[in-house]
Every structure is written in structure tokens, then in C-alpha cells.
Length: 140
Image: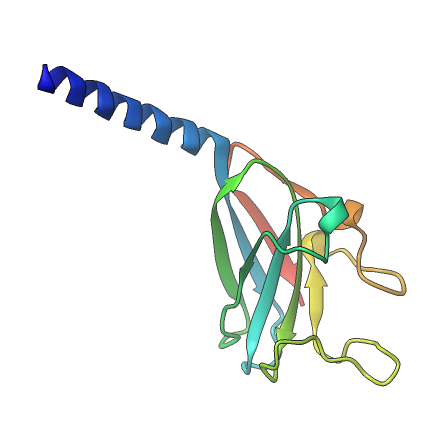
């Protein structure tokens, strides 16, 4: 009796693990053209147009100790995502701007999207995480 209950429990755990693996995927992001090897790259991942640039779903903060860095987000639910990032050269946790509000630290978006008089729009940064691992290459 105990063996059959244990077998059923192990089967259920295996099934749940398989379902989780089928419902999630990974995203690997490579940031290139890092000009100074000081500070950190602050990466924000968003999953909804309404909360884009307002509510980060996940974030990473790799050291900027090379001309390129790569990070991976694991176990992401399948769906649409967007990325914004900046090189926090002075590690103050803020995107520095000049006196008229133009960023003075390097920044970028997924799909290498650019904005016109502001950040890139959701429809330009949006990409889909699906069944296979997703890769984004972003140039600062």
C-alpha cells in the first residue's frame, strides 16, 4: 500500500514538473557595445503593455566588466515581453540625464528599438517567449 501511494506521488510530481517545463521557457539576453567596464547593466523585463516601463517582472544587474555581457531569465511563462536596460556607470541606481532630461548614460531596448523623443514603444520592443529558448541581442 505504501509503495503504491509513493509511486502515485512520484508520478504526480513528475507530471507537474513536465507541465511546468511545457508552460515556461528561457530568455537569454546578450548586451554588446559596452564602452566602459565600470558600473552595472540594469536590465528590466516587462510582460504587459499597460505596465511597460512601470512594473518590472524580473530584473538582472550584471557587472559591466567586459565589452559584452550575457544573462538568462529562466522559467518564464510563455507570452510577450519587452526589455529596457541602461548602463549604470556610476552605480547610483538611476538613469542619469542632462539638464533637459536627455539620458547621459547608455540605454537600449529589446529588438534594438529606438524611441522618438522618448522611450521606444511597446509594439517596437515586444517579442514572444515560446516553446523554444528565446534569444535577444541588444546593442548599447
